[in-house]
Length: 175
Ligand code: SF4
Ligand code: SF4
Image (cartoon, helix red, strand yellow):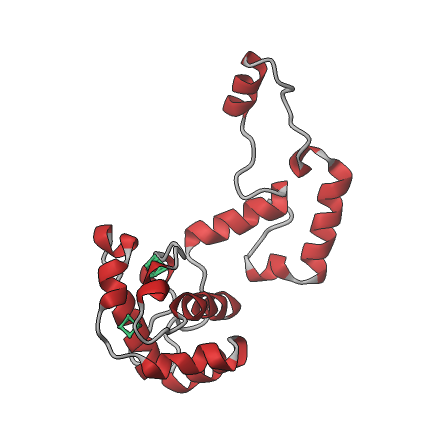
């Protein structure tokens, strides 16, 4: 796993490479007015400050792409709808997340979800407790989901290997 902090040059290069140019360029119009932070439902209950994330991205200073902040956005688009400069905030945040993942900076919770996806075909597999609940409701114990369709799961895992997604999310085939 590499250093969490990307340099100014790296962030800018990656942002412009990954996001559409108009999206990336829109960041230069930020007034730092704070409307985004004031509108953010996540920021009301967490330390996440949208304006600060945009500022740090713009300056490329101290942006730690593994930091939780980056993952606290719910992609509700409220900030983007209200931004007076029409900055494509959500696309920028999603691009930063993609950069973080590409550089191997996933937080443990996301690693676990990705590993579940490879193992079961679902981020949240059906557990015994829920199987019992289904039975009590008169439903089949196992729904027709990929978790229970061996051939479909095999195909998914074939693609995962082909794309080397397993390596990216530190998946252990033997564990
Ligand atoms: S609302 Fe738009 S212009 Fe204002 S701080 Fe946020 S991103 Fe910048
Ligand atoms: S899209 Fe993300 S950053 Fe914008 S208001 Fe919603 S939660 Fe906050």
